[in-house]
Length: 281
Length: 122
Image (cartoon, rainbow over all chains, first blue to last red; front, side, top):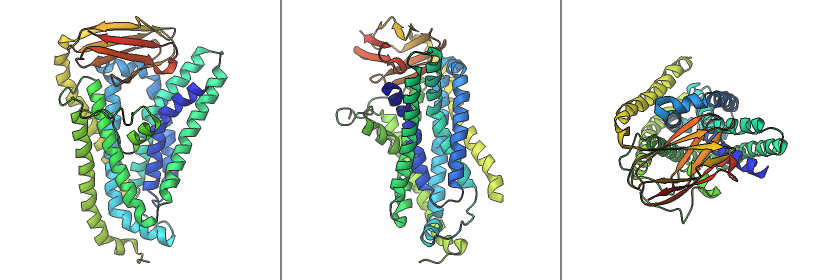
């Protein structure tokens, strides 16, 4: 039972952390709770589809299908998160003003909400298919210990959801004026980490074989397999043995998002007072 | 309302972009696979057969894992940085870059008690 709990929790941890961060990062955006729920449901449906066609996906592209599919999902998630950071940079000012005044929802456009939902769905779908396959395996193996395994799995899922809530609430406890600066930075690093993971997938598929020397080895200090290592791996993209290319892609992604966000922020500051219709308190 | 209608094209453009990047990468890779060492192992009753695999150092390896069990398995190796789902009654291909001499443990994450193996590079 404990084994099942650990396996399922390990798989859902990444999605749980991402959802928590994204929730906190979009505080004050109208309709975000509903969107997150829809995103999770879409992700679960996607997981079931991916699990059903796991064999076909795996054998596509000369056995590279699984890696290519994961890489595509990761790259898409990176684009969405980048978009989110840039959008938030522009609108953080209005949202901060609103959160301070506890005013009614201001229509800020549904684009940000759609992007948010997609990120959640992708995060759930990525690891969710593995949970579905694991659970299907339990059912296929029949009676012996199935109940205990099912209970353990349910516990793992619940823990994952608890992580989401914990991260979201923890970040939301930050003072409003720092909230979006912190979450913006966090989402930027998270996206950079996912981009580095995409590199890893493409390397596994045998498609990238340049700059694949190990940049550093900090396994002795903090292993990616330890729980703190896993959490930092998702939150800030920590890697215990990155390749040179992974390092380059990580830095390039983070810098690109940061610079674009900065540019849009200036734009948002110039426009915010008139558009939001709210004074500074 | 203009926001609402603007969403799908932006999203699908990003998706198309991601797929295009991947597609571009696939093409040149077909050429390279010629000098790979091919090794295959099977999973049966949540055990690897053979559980010990020997491969030469300095050569790219194509490891085919055939899962004869009905349930899925996740082939994993920490030191090789491999995590790969192998569907029930399915086959998975794992590509490894040329390795230095040494040994690498691998295991099936879903049945870690029984599914244990060792890759020896010599």
